[in-house]
Image 1 (cartoon, rainbow, N blue to C red):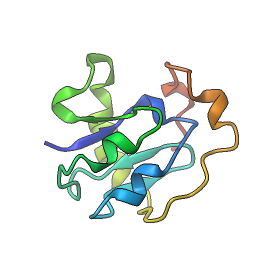
Image 2 (cartoon, rainbow, N blue to C red):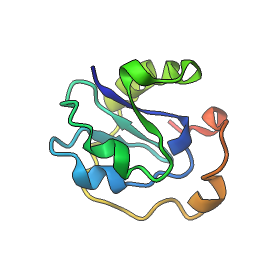
Image 3 (cartoon, rainbow, N blue to C red):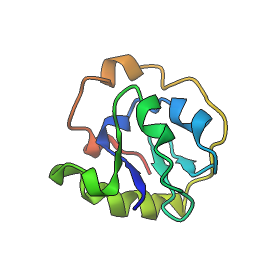
Image 4 (cartoon, rainbow, N blue to C red):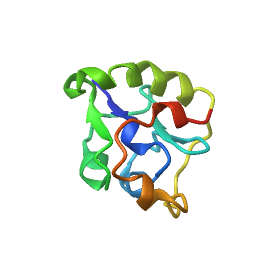
Length: 107
């Protein structure tokens, strides 16, 4: 089992999770983070650090977030590793409560 970043992260990109990852499994895109399933060691540390509750165990994903399993795996192969916490996107607080954001994902 691996952990998966879901739709809530889009257009927020809080990086609190990156600070606690012991294996540098996070990858950074323009407005979203993903977890590389080949690097994730299922430690759970990132889950409680995410201020928008965007990280789930693969087995616990809500049904409407299941496509993010494949999306994390795909984008993890394309995006660079992020190993340090950064400021969230400038309008992250405005996007934080928005639930349906997949259409805003920038690759």
